[in-house]
Length: 333
Image (cartoon, rainbow, N blue to C red; front, side):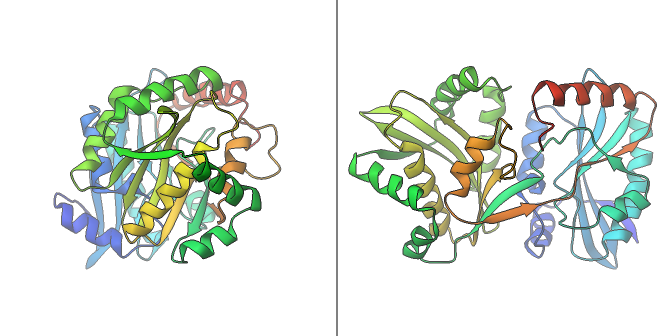
């Protein structure tokens, strides 16, 4: 087995088409986005006569210490243990060269935690991308999807239609950001910057894989979302809303429109992105999770984000992130 850097977009994307466990965070265009943000990346391919695994590696610069990050990867077609073994060896050498404190891997594997422990990984103190998502099979007809929804969700979609709510497609990320800033002020989370949102849109728009939807009532934007459509999966990546018209369920119709758009693009699945479990009632995402789950679907849980320690400075990062998790009230996960 050997590892080589992959410089051909078609090689990368064609391999991913064969794999089930994946998200757009390992797409070629996500790598392009990270380079736009000024990050250094490596696209590594693991070969055993043929390509059997890929890993997008990003060097994350942080005040608490730089580290190498593999977002929702590696993605493998077979031989998980062998891929992880050779990849860990490669990343350890790269980490020492790049003078980082640790390697962080956030795999979208539904099993395989024992493999990580075997090769010296430990649970990370905090996750960077969802470890529990909500996914819907959208191969059913629209009528069937509606019938499988929670009764209240179905009612609110129809109510929004009766109230003449309008859903508009746009490439104007600034319009989303205006509402996003209102949402941040209300919910007290750390938002992505406008440059981040613009670069993400730019990275995926060339392949027509991203869309901004605006939900309007009385000609005012009161709900918005950014959606990625990649390799047969639709993703609800960013959302924002206003409380100006609390009795008008604009967000319900907006998300239903996104699901219909995913079907139009021949997607087989719709991923609502991060959720929390039903018993995490004190978690700040609990209400949003109930909203998403009302559309039908099922949990898709990945193994916990894993860290591989390179340098003693890792423990500074560990303490800072552990305290941050407590401060944000995320120990309910």
